[in-house]
Length: 624
Image (cartoon, rainbow, N blue to C red; front, side, top):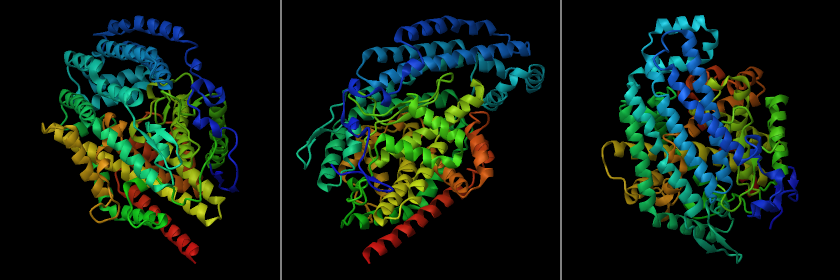
């Protein structure tokens, strides 16, 4: 095993290096595990809290028919509903995160199923609220807001209800829509259990004699191996096995699309895209403009792919080369402790309050670091436990990408922390559209911090390559997913069949276009046609495009902050604290970025080309 390279020079990894190989959760020190007792001290306490809140749900019906009679009644109803939702989210977070520790544990799966039932029950009981508010005229709402100052925290919520009047049904229709919530998460839940607990992941033998079972976490690790034949074998085995189950995955996706079609029709939207985006008041044109912008700039992406081919020294770049380390002799590896130090140092431009909270997250058991048997794959931040603190799930493998992922999730965590601290619960949850701004902003600060301390051309080249990988993965790859997601919804809306084979063909065509397969830029091998089956975000209803739009927004903001623009830094911290107090387009405008213009995307492309210019200069120096 190679010694990892610190940006200050070669060093031995210290502290936690070995735990990324330990699969038994009981053997992982508590220091590297989150502590869910901060939410509830025990499963029994969770059940008691659930029983108490379930008993309170019928109280919502006592307000029925009275919301327009007085400001006091309207306020009482909204406060009661908000309190119940806050507690339901707390209960659900405990159940879901407990399950994520070991998806094989049936106890927590049952608790999640209980919560789905409870949410559906609450939705049915509360179904009359919005239709009843819609019967109140604007003048009366304005008068109520003047009479009851405490109603002010619901001003944005009330404005949003009136905005969506054309898409809100009668009380009976809203109850049916709420009851449909009992079935709404079925496809996503089946996908999660199937891929995390029951899927028969393949085993392969590597060139070093090691036999590995290619779970999602193991695939993510071994696709980065410097040995090209091993990478080729990893991709062929992993995606080949996914392809064997394309019929099952296709059926799951089809079920998800039918759910989205139901809500589109029930809410009287013209398309699933409009239905999904209107929840945050995002014009559909923003989505279409992103896809067009990326397709118009594929030449820039292909320039990067050709640069990767040149650095790797291969005659032909294949899809299985996309995650290989750019330089075999530069092993960018970081223990948890090293990563924490770099994270804190890189976040210094955001001020002492920001970094002090980050340190608290490391010391206070907010983070679950290492992959273990049965643990949910991937990474996320959960900031929905309003009265406690956010949590982060990782599958840390001591790689640079893992440090970058930690930085990414901390962006979400800090936005949740500041929003929960500053906003009342009613406006604490920030819109999905801005959710990835803080995370990609943090990644930009990390790369800038590391580059400041690096003089070695090889290490610098590797880190610049990692920055471009971020653009590849966040702007181009996520837009590739967004285009696929749009196409499958359009096909579903037309009543076209969506079998696993159809999805394979569609995905292969889009992927080959993005990677320049026909021009020989990057060969998309046959097994990649099944990659769509791996992507959980296709169950998130038009989520992925926001990674790309958020990246372009954060690129514009981070460059200004790094240049020492204190006014932008102040506005950015205010943005982190704004939660959902306004529509996302407005929140970003207040921070200094207008997402209805092409400027953020154009700035990202310019920066991408500047980085490639620098990498080519380094390559020329190395050559000489």
